[in-house]
Amino acid sequence: MAPSKRGGDEPDKDPYDVLDVKFSASEAEVTKAYRKLALRYHPDKQSGKTEKELEEVAKKFQEIQEARDFLLNEEKRKKYDAKRASLLARKMADEARESKMTSNRKRMREQLAQQEADGSDKLSQKKQKAAKVEELKRQGKEMRENYADRQSQQPTKPIFRAPAPSKPENMEDRQVRLKWSRKKMKISPSEHSLAQLMQAFGKVEEVEMLGKKGNAALVTFISGKSCAPCVEAYLESNEMRASYVGGRKETEERKKKHEEEESNNISSTTSQKDDSMGQESVKDYQLRRAAEREHLLRQMEQDEDDAKQSISEVGKESKQPAKTANQRQPPSSFPPDFPSTDEFKACKTPFEKLNLAESQILKPLLLDEASSVWEVPCEQAPKRVAASFRKHGRFNDQMASDGGI
Image (cartoon, rainbow, N blue to C red; front, side):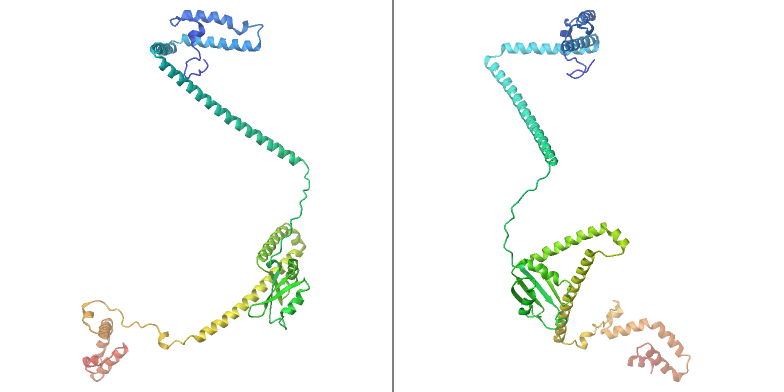
C-alpha cells in the first residue's frame, strides 16, 4: 500500500465509501464489492478511451485495491473503525449543539470563520507577492547578464572627453630648493647669479636665500614645467643639488618609487638575459646612480649637522664647572655592618666594634703566632709579638701594654 497523506497507515479516502459498503460489512462482502469494481475499472478493459481518462481509471483502480487491502487487515480496520466512530459521534454532537445555538452565536461563528479565511487569503497573497518579487529579481539578473555579454562582444568605441580646464598652479609646484657645498664651490652664489643660472630652465619669478649658512636658496619659476629639468640637471652634480618643495616633493618621490618598482619587475623578467650577457641595463644604471647621489646628498647634510652639534656641545662643556676631587670619589663604606650580638652592642664606638671583629677573625692566626713566640729567646719575644700584630695590620698602645712591650 502506498504511504498515506494523512500519516501512518490510514488511506487518503474512506475505504467504505470507495468500495460502497456498509460500516458493518464482512470480509466476504468487502471482497465481493472489490471484484465488482475491479471488473469495471481494470486497465485491460478500458479500450477506446483517451489518455487522460486512462489516468483517472488507473488512479481509481489503485484506490480500490488499497481500500480492499486495508479493510481485510483486521488490526488496521479495528483502529480505523474506532477513530471513525469517534469522529461520527463528535459530528453528531456538533450538529446537536448547532441546533440549540442562537442566531447571534451562529453569526459570530460565521464571522470568525470568515476572518480565518480572509487571513489565510492574505497570507497566500503575501506569499504570492514575495514569489513575484523573487521572480522579478531573477529576471533582472538575467537581463543584466545578457546585456553584459552583448557589451563584451561588441567592439569598444573610443569615448571623446573634453579636456578639463587647467587649474592654477600652486606656489609650491613652481618652486625648487637649491643647496650647495661651500667647500666645493669657489665663489658662493648670490640671488642675482642664481637667477641668471636658472634662466636656462625657464623664466624665474623670485630667488630667496635660505638659512644662516648661506648654502641654500628657494627659486620660484613662472611655470611649474621648469622645475623638472632643473632637478634632473643637478642630479649628478657634486657641488649643487636641486629638489622639489612641499606636496610635489612627495608626489615625485611616490612616482619615482613606482617607476623603480616597475623597473625592478621588468628587470626580474629579463634577469636571465642580463646575467648571460654580463651587462647592466641603462635603466638599472640610472637608478643606481640616482640612489648614490641621494645617499651622497644626505651624507653631506648629516656631516654639516654633526659639525654644528659638536661645536654646540664643546661650548656647553666649557661653561660647566670642573668637578672637585671629593665629587669624583665614590661614597665611603665606613663603618661596615657588624653582627647584632651582645658583644658588639656593648661597644660604644665603631672603632671598638672594628677591634672586636678583627680579634675574632684573626684569633686563630694570632694563636699560631703567639705559640711561635715562646719558642724564641725571651729578649726577642716582645719584638716577635709586635711584628705579628704589624703583619696583620693592627697595632696600638692597648695591645702593646697587654703584650708587655
